[in-house]
Length: 178
Length: 153
Image (cartoon, rainbow over the protein chains, first blue to last red):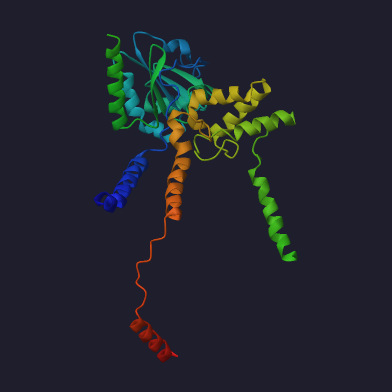
C-alpha cells in the first residue's frame, strides 16, 4: 500500500533522472568511427615552396606520437587554438602535422606567417576530399595517432580543458609502449 | 470552389522546394541520378544535423553529394556507398539508425511503452464494476423524497 502511494513519486524521479542525463549530453559530439583504425591513405601536395607535402607514410613513425591538425586560414577557431598547437609542436616525442583544409595555399601561408608555423609538415587538401576520408566535418579538428593508428579525435578548437585532456592522452600513449 | 484556386496554386509552387536545385553537375543518366538522390536522402548533413545532404547547401553536403554521384557512376552498390560513409562518419551519418544492440531501446522502446499502457487500459476496462453498496431507500425516505420532488414542481 505504501509502495502504491509513492509510485507516482518513483515514476517522477525516474523521468527526472532520465531528463537530467539526457539533456546534459552534447548532441554535437559526434562519436568518431575511426578510433583505433589505421589512418586513411593519402598523399597531399605541399603549400607552395614549403617543404614536401604530407603523406600517410609520414604517420607510421614508431618513435613519435603523431598529431594531425586540420586547419584553414578562413577558420576563426583555428586562430584561437594556435597557441595550443605551438605548445604541442614543441613537445618532445611528438610530431605535429598540419592539413590545410579547402584553403588557398597563399592564404594558408600568410596565416602561418603572421601567427607562426607550429607544424613539422603540411599537406594541402584543396578539395577537402582527404578530410572526408578522415571523417572530418570541419575545421579545426585534431587527431592523435600512434604507429599509424588513430587513437583520439577532437572536434573544434583546443581550449585549456581539451589541452589538458590531449596532454594526458599523449603521455598515456607514450608510456603504453614502454 | 474558385477561392481555393489561389491557395492550391501557391502550395503547388512550394512542392519544388524539396527538389535539388543547387547542383549543376548531375548524372546524365536519369536512372543513376535518381538512385544517387535516393541514397543522398538517407545521409545526414553532418554540419546541419537534422537535414539530409539533399536538402543542404553546406560545403560538406555538396562534397558528399559529389562523392555519392561519383560512386554511383563507378558502379558501386547502394550498400557499398552507405558503408563508405559509415566507415568514416559512423552510424550518425545515417538519418535512419540501424537496428543493433545500442539502438534496441530506441526501436523497441515505443512498442514496449505501448504494451505497458495497453496492459493498464486492458486491466481498467476488464475491471468488474464495484458492487453497489448503497442500501435501498426505506419507506420513510421514499415518502420524504416524493414530498421534496412535489415541492420543487
